[in-house]
Amino acid sequence: MNPVAVSFGKPRGNKLTACWSARAEPRLCYVTPGDRPAIMNFDREKRMTNKPAPTEVAIHELIAGRWSPRAYSSEPVSREHLRSVLEAARWAPSAYNAQPWRFLVFDRSVDEVSFKQAFATLVPFNQGWNSRAPVLIAVTTHTLTNKGEVNRCAAYDAGSAAMALVLQAHALGLAAHQMSGFDPNAFRTTFALPNDVDVIAIISLGHYGEVDKLDPVLREREKSVRQRLPLADVAYGGGWKKAL
Ligand SMILES: Cc1cc2nc3c(=O)[nH]c(=O)nc-3n(C[C@H](O)[C@H](O)[C@H](O)COP(=O)(O)O)c2cc1C
Image (cartoon, rainbow, N blue to C red; front, side):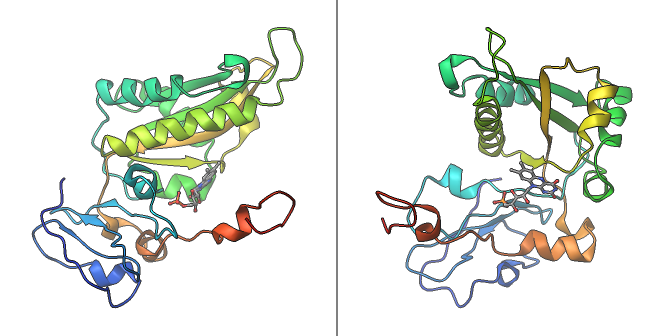
Protein backbone atom coordinates (compact mmCIF):
# COMPACT_ATOMS: atom_id res chain seq x y z
CA MET A 1 0.00 0.00 0.00
CA ASN A 2 1.33 3.44 -0.81
CA PRO A 3 2.24 5.72 2.05
CA VAL A 4 0.05 8.80 2.40
CA ALA A 5 2.04 10.99 4.72
CA VAL A 6 5.62 11.99 5.23
CA SER A 7 7.23 14.15 7.85
CA PHE A 8 10.48 16.01 7.42
CA GLY A 9 13.00 17.29 9.92
CA LYS A 10 15.34 15.49 12.23
CA PRO A 11 13.98 12.30 13.77
CA ARG A 12 14.37 11.91 17.53
CA GLY A 13 15.89 8.44 17.53
CA ASN A 14 16.62 5.44 15.42
CA LYS A 15 14.15 3.03 16.96
CA LEU A 16 11.62 1.65 14.54
CA THR A 17 9.31 1.09 17.47
CA ALA A 18 8.96 4.85 17.65
CA CYS A 19 7.07 4.60 14.36
CA TRP A 20 4.91 1.70 15.44
CA SER A 21 1.62 3.38 16.05
CA ALA A 22 -1.95 2.17 15.91
CA ARG A 23 -2.83 4.85 13.39
CA ALA A 24 -5.39 3.72 10.89
CA GLU A 25 -3.64 5.40 7.99
CA PRO A 26 -0.47 4.16 6.41
CA ARG A 27 2.40 6.53 6.97
CA LEU A 28 6.04 7.14 6.46
CA CYS A 29 8.44 7.32 9.37
CA TYR A 30 12.09 7.97 9.93
CA VAL A 31 14.20 5.10 11.08
CA THR A 32 17.55 6.78 11.29
CA PRO A 33 19.03 10.02 12.54
CA GLY A 34 20.49 12.25 9.86
CA ASP A 35 19.54 14.74 7.22
CA ARG A 36 18.30 12.24 4.67
CA PRO A 37 14.96 10.78 5.70
CA ALA A 38 14.71 7.00 5.78
CA ILE A 39 11.14 5.81 5.60
CA MET A 40 9.22 2.84 6.77
CA ASN A 41 5.74 1.79 5.71
CA PHE A 42 2.84 0.40 7.69
CA ASP A 43 -0.54 -0.38 6.28
CA ARG A 44 -3.94 -0.59 7.90
CA GLU A 45 -3.37 -4.18 8.98
CA LYS A 46 -0.16 -3.16 10.76
CA ARG A 47 1.90 -4.99 8.20
CA MET A 48 5.43 -3.71 7.83
CA THR A 49 6.00 -3.52 4.11
CA ASN A 50 9.21 -1.55 4.00
CA LYS A 51 12.29 -1.42 6.20
CA PRO A 52 14.78 0.91 4.59
CA ALA A 53 18.45 0.61 5.33
CA PRO A 54 19.92 3.56 7.23
CA THR A 55 22.55 3.98 4.52
CA GLU A 56 25.75 6.05 4.74
CA VAL A 57 25.25 7.16 1.15
CA ALA A 58 22.02 7.53 -0.82
CA ILE A 59 21.16 4.43 -2.88
CA HIS A 60 18.16 3.40 -4.94
CA GLU A 61 15.09 2.88 -2.81
CA LEU A 62 14.51 -0.59 -4.23
CA ILE A 63 17.86 -1.73 -2.86
CA ALA A 64 17.57 0.23 0.38
CA GLY A 65 14.01 -0.94 1.01
CA ARG A 66 14.45 -4.67 0.41
CA TRP A 67 14.68 -6.56 3.66
CA SER A 68 14.13 -10.03 5.06
CA PRO A 69 10.72 -10.12 6.74
CA ARG A 70 9.40 -13.03 8.80
CA ALA A 71 5.73 -12.09 9.17
CA TYR A 72 3.75 -13.66 6.33
CA SER A 73 0.04 -13.84 5.67
CA SER A 74 -1.28 -17.07 4.18
CA GLU A 75 -2.57 -15.34 1.03
CA PRO A 76 -1.32 -17.22 -2.05
CA VAL A 77 1.07 -15.61 -4.50
CA SER A 78 -0.46 -15.12 -7.94
CA ARG A 79 1.00 -17.00 -10.90
CA GLU A 80 1.73 -13.66 -12.51
CA HIS A 81 3.83 -12.52 -9.55
CA LEU A 82 5.55 -15.86 -9.28
CA ARG A 83 6.52 -15.79 -12.94
CA SER A 84 7.67 -12.20 -12.56
CA VAL A 85 10.15 -12.93 -9.76
CA LEU A 86 11.49 -15.96 -11.65
CA GLU A 87 11.81 -13.91 -14.82
CA ALA A 88 13.87 -11.33 -12.90
CA ALA A 89 16.16 -14.14 -11.75
CA ARG A 90 16.45 -15.44 -15.32
CA TRP A 91 17.93 -12.12 -16.42
CA ALA A 92 20.73 -12.13 -13.88
CA PRO A 93 24.27 -11.99 -15.25
CA SER A 94 26.51 -15.06 -15.08
CA ALA A 95 30.04 -16.04 -16.02
CA TYR A 96 30.11 -16.97 -19.73
CA ASN A 97 26.33 -16.47 -19.61
CA ALA A 98 26.20 -20.06 -18.37
CA GLN A 99 23.05 -19.43 -16.29
CA PRO A 100 23.81 -22.32 -13.92
CA TRP A 101 20.89 -21.57 -11.57
CA ARG A 102 17.77 -23.72 -11.43
CA PHE A 103 14.80 -22.87 -9.21
CA LEU A 104 12.45 -25.44 -7.71
CA VAL A 105 9.16 -23.77 -6.84
CA PHE A 106 6.91 -25.17 -4.12
CA ASP A 107 3.53 -23.47 -4.12
CA ARG A 108 1.32 -24.59 -1.26
CA SER A 109 -1.83 -23.66 -3.19
CA VAL A 110 -0.81 -25.76 -6.20
CA ASP A 111 0.94 -28.83 -4.78
CA GLU A 112 0.66 -29.15 -1.02
CA VAL A 113 2.48 -32.49 -0.92
CA SER A 114 5.72 -31.23 -2.44
CA PHE A 115 5.42 -27.99 -0.46
CA LYS A 116 5.30 -29.99 2.77
CA GLN A 117 8.28 -32.07 1.67
CA ALA A 118 10.35 -28.94 1.03
CA PHE A 119 9.07 -27.32 4.24
CA ALA A 120 10.16 -30.41 6.20
CA THR A 121 13.80 -29.79 5.20
CA LEU A 122 13.83 -26.37 6.93
CA VAL A 123 15.41 -26.18 10.38
CA PRO A 124 12.82 -25.85 13.17
CA PHE A 125 13.54 -22.13 13.67
CA ASN A 126 12.76 -21.41 10.03
CA GLN A 127 9.71 -23.68 10.07
CA GLY A 128 8.34 -21.62 12.94
CA TRP A 129 8.16 -18.24 11.24
CA ASN A 130 7.36 -19.76 7.82
CA SER A 131 4.24 -21.54 9.02
CA ARG A 132 2.03 -19.27 6.87
CA ALA A 133 4.39 -18.73 3.92
CA PRO A 134 2.61 -19.80 0.72
CA VAL A 135 5.66 -20.38 -1.50
CA LEU A 136 9.15 -21.80 -1.08
CA ILE A 137 11.72 -21.51 -3.85
CA ALA A 138 14.87 -23.62 -3.71
CA VAL A 139 17.92 -22.04 -5.33
CA THR A 140 20.02 -24.75 -6.94
CA THR A 141 22.91 -24.54 -9.32
CA HIS A 142 24.77 -26.71 -11.80
CA THR A 143 28.28 -26.97 -10.41
CA LEU A 144 29.99 -28.05 -13.65
CA THR A 145 30.48 -26.27 -16.95
CA ASN A 146 29.41 -27.76 -20.29
CA LYS A 147 32.94 -29.19 -20.52
CA GLY A 148 32.51 -31.00 -17.21
CA GLU A 149 34.89 -28.69 -15.35
CA VAL A 150 34.10 -27.14 -11.99
CA ASN A 151 32.33 -23.82 -12.52
CA ARG A 152 33.87 -21.73 -9.76
CA CYS A 153 31.31 -18.99 -10.35
CA ALA A 154 28.27 -21.26 -10.02
CA ALA A 155 27.33 -20.19 -6.51
CA TYR A 156 28.16 -16.56 -7.26
CA ASP A 157 25.86 -16.61 -10.28
CA ALA A 158 23.04 -18.36 -8.41
CA GLY A 159 23.34 -15.78 -5.63
CA SER A 160 23.12 -12.99 -8.14
CA ALA A 161 19.96 -14.54 -9.63
CA ALA A 162 18.51 -14.93 -6.12
CA MET A 163 19.16 -11.25 -5.44
CA ALA A 164 17.34 -10.29 -8.63
CA LEU A 165 14.45 -12.49 -7.51
CA VAL A 166 14.13 -10.91 -4.08
CA LEU A 167 14.48 -7.39 -5.46
CA GLN A 168 11.70 -8.06 -7.94
CA ALA A 169 9.60 -9.47 -5.12
CA HIS A 170 10.17 -6.28 -3.16
CA ALA A 171 9.28 -4.16 -6.18
CA LEU A 172 5.99 -6.09 -6.41
CA GLY A 173 5.24 -5.45 -2.74
CA LEU A 174 5.89 -9.09 -1.82
CA ALA A 175 7.90 -10.37 1.11
CA ALA A 176 10.87 -12.65 0.34
CA HIS A 177 13.35 -14.17 2.77
CA GLN A 178 16.41 -16.22 1.82
CA MET A 179 17.45 -19.11 4.05
CA SER A 180 20.43 -21.39 4.41
CA GLY A 181 18.82 -22.99 7.45
CA PHE A 182 17.66 -26.24 5.89
CA ASP A 183 19.05 -29.74 5.40
CA PRO A 184 20.62 -29.84 1.92
CA ASN A 185 21.17 -33.60 2.03
CA ALA A 186 17.55 -34.25 2.90
CA PHE A 187 16.50 -31.87 0.13
CA ARG A 188 18.82 -33.56 -2.36
CA THR A 189 17.43 -36.99 -1.53
CA THR A 190 13.78 -35.96 -1.41
CA PHE A 191 13.88 -34.23 -4.76
CA ALA A 192 16.40 -36.54 -6.46
CA LEU A 193 18.85 -33.80 -7.44
CA PRO A 194 21.49 -34.81 -9.98
CA ASN A 195 25.02 -35.22 -8.53
CA ASP A 196 26.34 -32.09 -10.22
CA VAL A 197 23.57 -29.88 -8.83
CA ASP A 198 23.92 -28.15 -5.45
CA VAL A 199 21.06 -26.71 -3.47
CA ILE A 200 22.26 -23.45 -1.93
CA ALA A 201 19.30 -21.70 -0.36
CA ILE A 202 15.54 -21.75 0.04
CA ILE A 203 13.61 -18.50 -0.36
CA SER A 204 10.20 -18.08 1.20
CA LEU A 205 7.88 -15.79 -0.71
CA GLY A 206 4.49 -14.38 0.15
CA HIS A 207 2.49 -11.39 1.27
CA TYR A 208 3.36 -9.40 4.35
CA GLY A 209 1.53 -10.51 7.48
CA GLU A 210 0.89 -8.97 10.87
CA VAL A 211 4.08 -8.51 12.81
CA ASP A 212 2.14 -8.91 16.05
CA LYS A 213 1.49 -12.55 15.19
CA LEU A 214 5.20 -13.35 15.50
CA ASP A 215 6.55 -14.54 18.82
CA PRO A 216 7.87 -11.68 21.02
CA VAL A 217 11.55 -12.21 20.17
CA LEU A 218 10.99 -12.25 16.42
CA ARG A 219 8.54 -9.37 16.71
CA GLU A 220 11.29 -7.19 18.19
CA ARG A 221 13.77 -8.40 15.60
CA GLU A 222 11.28 -7.53 12.87
CA LYS A 223 11.11 -3.97 14.13
CA SER A 224 14.81 -3.50 14.83
CA VAL A 225 16.96 -1.25 12.68
CA ARG A 226 18.88 -3.10 9.96
CA GLN A 227 22.62 -3.25 10.56
CA ARG A 228 25.68 -3.47 8.35
CA LEU A 229 29.44 -3.16 8.74
CA PRO A 230 30.67 0.36 7.96
CA LEU A 231 31.42 1.03 4.29
CA ALA A 232 35.10 1.60 5.13
CA ASP A 233 35.30 -1.94 6.58
CA VAL A 234 34.04 -3.65 3.43
CA ALA A 235 35.48 -1.54 0.61
CA TYR A 236 39.23 -1.00 0.24
CA GLY A 237 41.10 1.10 -2.25
CA GLY A 238 44.13 -0.18 -4.16
CA GLY A 239 45.12 -2.89 -1.69
CA TRP A 240 43.97 -5.06 1.19
CA LYS A 241 42.67 -2.89 4.03
CA LYS A 242 43.83 0.31 2.35
CA ALA A 243 41.35 3.11 2.83
CA LEU A 244 39.32 3.99 -0.21
C1 LIG B 1 22.24 -16.97 2.00
C2 LIG B 1 21.37 -16.47 3.12
C3 LIG B 1 20.94 -17.34 4.10
C4 LIG B 1 20.09 -16.91 5.12
N1 LIG B 1 19.58 -17.81 6.01
C5 LIG B 1 18.64 -17.43 6.89
C6 LIG B 1 17.98 -18.41 7.68
O1 LIG B 1 18.21 -19.62 7.58
N2 LIG B 1 17.04 -17.97 8.55
C7 LIG B 1 16.73 -16.65 8.69
O2 LIG B 1 15.86 -16.34 9.50
N3 LIG B 1 17.31 -15.71 7.92
C8 LIG B 1 18.26 -16.06 7.01
N4 LIG B 1 18.84 -15.13 6.18
C9 LIG B 1 18.46 -13.71 6.29
C10 LIG B 1 19.58 -12.89 6.90
O3 LIG B 1 19.60 -13.09 8.29
C11 LIG B 1 19.36 -11.41 6.53
O4 LIG B 1 19.51 -11.25 5.14
C12 LIG B 1 20.36 -10.50 7.25
O5 LIG B 1 20.13 -10.50 8.63
C13 LIG B 1 20.27 -9.07 6.74
O6 LIG B 1 18.94 -8.60 6.91
P1 LIG B 1 18.17 -7.93 5.69
O7 LIG B 1 18.08 -8.97 4.59
O8 LIG B 1 16.82 -7.58 6.26
O9 LIG B 1 18.95 -6.75 5.26
C14 LIG B 1 19.70 -15.54 5.18
C15 LIG B 1 20.15 -14.66 4.19
C16 LIG B 1 20.96 -15.11 3.17
C17 LIG B 1 21.40 -14.15 2.09
